[in-house]
Image (cartoon, one colour):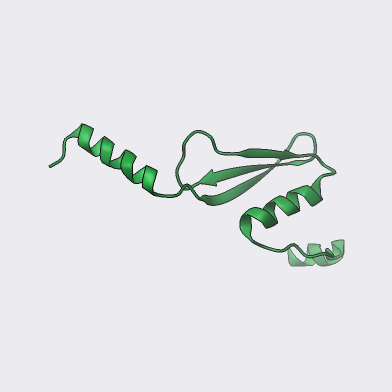
Length: 87
């Protein structure tokens, strides 16, 4: 059985070999009416990115999500009535 120091060294080596990838993005409503995008990485290293978007920066938030999640946002949004029916 490996001792504690060997186990720590093994874990450190494994973290160095594996890639720190984006696991999820958590969106929160900001007090200024905008949004906060918190990145959750596969390996927490204390430096997970947090991005703030103002209430008039929805297009920038959409571009940010497209970039990181590899998705394409619709160019036209449904009307408010359709959006209410879907929720």
